[in-house]
Image 1 (cartoon, one colour):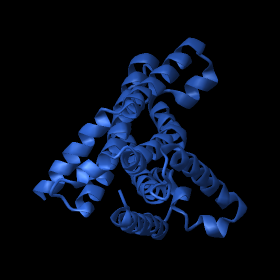
Image 2 (cartoon, one colour):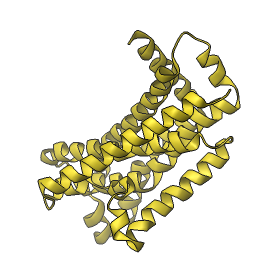
Image 3 (cartoon, helix red, strand yellow):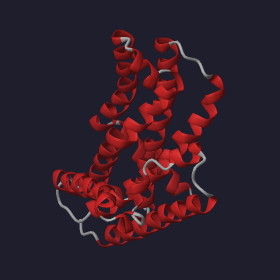
Length: 249
């Protein structure tokens, strides 16, 4: 466990030094700030009704997990698993007395930590900017909104595992990222073309937090979605490790 922990710390430090991570954290802060300022300046009744207060935080969550966060998750995975193999820095990491399994798990863990950190930062920024700039302080709704942000992390972590798995089939970061974006976009369209297939795709449940908050889903449906997310994570982690183990550096 000590070596795994040290590997996670090392991977986290490397991610913090990347420009992609800096842009990720900056955008996470600027998105709710810019949106709140825009609403303040526009001051239309429709915009205030849709975005103000707790609705503002939930709207920011929808924007974040629908567009911004998936892009950065795919970029993180491409840099961690494809970029490092291309610039030979992965070879240096494997020279240490650490197994490939621990290096692989450390990369996935570091990636997942940044996904959760991004959502936590977005939650705090949305609540604070919504309160200070839009003058809405619905404190009694903070906990349910926090629960929604926490639930939103699950499909994004699965997305990261899928990108780590499939991305290793490519030799360039650009190729892995372009394919990842194409595959993710295609997966989001499939439920409209074939609902039966869409039901078993984890990408169909990136907004599953709405089912918990709305109270419209049965316990059986929530359990089914949780099983789909968990089984997808196991599949991609297993496949990703197989490719990582067989990778020639």
